[in-house]
Image (cartoon, rainbow, N blue to C red; front, side, top):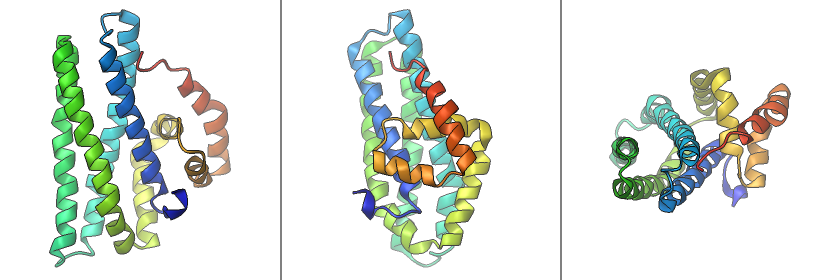
Length: 210
């Protein structure tokens, strides 16, 4: 339930929800086996590129800014460090599975694409569940409010204003209403206006997944 999610981790859960959503869109689009249709293929590729970009940025931000920060509090705690090692290893396993989907798309091999999609989706969903079950409690116990603010600043800098125009509409599309409202509250009033009046309508007009 939303009430059990802290203010510090609400953004992470909404990002994960969006990634699960698009993993399902990906699987359904591949199952239709209609990518020979040029219009559907263009829409599919557009959805896949956005999904891939957001997933990679999420993982890069954690690998660069979050896991190292947590490790500063865990110099001699082997069990907790092992959890972070697992998170990093899972990120590394997911990357080549995305590449396999890309390769299957380039070769137009529908059987290979279906198989690659299943493997990628299974690995991603297992990772998200594992992170929420084991890494999130570790984050919440280790990091201070100042740490979370520093991480948020690093993420904003990495995303940039241009990236935010895709990121926020992406994670809020089809999001749980209560969770979405909590994310919106983290934004400045001008940013909320831009999001609601410009960014979200523009993102909704993008044809994705076919």
